[in-house]
Image (cartoon, rainbow, N blue to C red; front, side, top):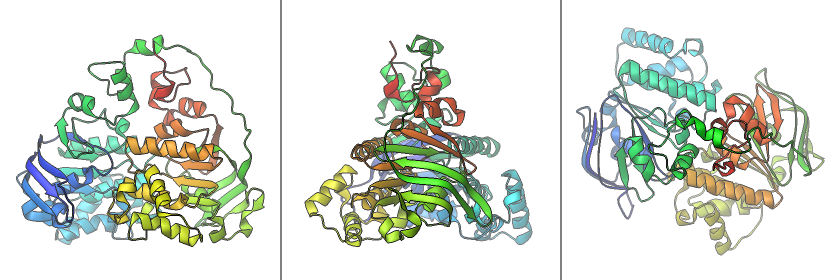
Length: 529
């Protein structure tokens, strides 16, 4: 079991405690969701359970933490690693070696196991996690789902009693996320694990969990069953939002738990999605566009238009070629075929000139953060483009992203969601015509997503072309003017969001599942008498 008693913690140089007199008790063998807004302290709480906080972070801490008889405050992360496995938000960041097998063995080397036992444990783990065929593969060559599996294998090889996972599905498509969560449940059952998962996409989690630890924006901590905590939470997934509006008690946690007669009572049954009309001019055109990497075909004869005043979302399974498409469009990887911007051949345009018109947010915001403060990140971009903005203008601009209070913070000290917003502000402060976003909601809570949605629509209404690659189906349904589904390097679908999010099972939204045949894909679409 995990017991936290009167826990108070304050980061170095912080003016107030992050947590103040926190108390809760997590029973052994349970699965607990850790939820709350970006920056509320979810990752910090997990790091306290394995001793990384305060041993690596510093700060002032009081109270007690007991993890199956061990005190992480006293013994630190090295000794806690024998009981607690931790998979971080960015699994690739915790990899040390080049290949899968060596990475798994590294965990046991740190524990000082003799070679015969270490070799046997590695072989057993590769088999148990269905990784034997990948044992000699480079970690850099794996898909997001495969990396998550390897990261899980690396912590499970030491036979921990507690498994901590920080945003384990943030980089995964819906089907891969479901597989990983099913796999975690299998591990929990097989090994009797106590599991804590920090996650923003609650719609993926609610049907699995026993308890919720919710940390609100003021860092107040609530603990209890889903039915006890969900009514108190401000940020909830679509089905919980709908259940609360309809005053259901208990709240349905899954689509299958809603009353069957609810869909029957909804109007407009049999509504057919409207066909797309293409009125806007194309800013970017790709014709017979292909990409080969290391002898493998990643994109094959892609034909695509990115239009002015339109939000185009691209979905698809991990490894479909979505990120490659963005990078190739900018010329960051070699390609064949045509790519034009407002009719001009992009092959004749160098990258410094291209990024004056096209902004690109990669999956990892750290790739774009170099300055000492959030405000300086904006100034760096403007300096690179020989532009000037007043301090007041820059602070107003940060306000659009909810970052004005963090203007003097070191960007890499921010949460993942806050870093994502900082990078997004930095790439758009010079007012580009085209904005490419690769998984922009990674680490973002529901409020931050709503803020991003509002901002993206503002850009669209100002005539910009927005291309958004995402695994976040609910966000894509909220934003899309047009949707593309990419699969194994080919365009499987290009057209109406109502078709994409209702007729493709892997990408159906919660509302599409709850109200089949209506064409409803977001909570705002729903009309129930």
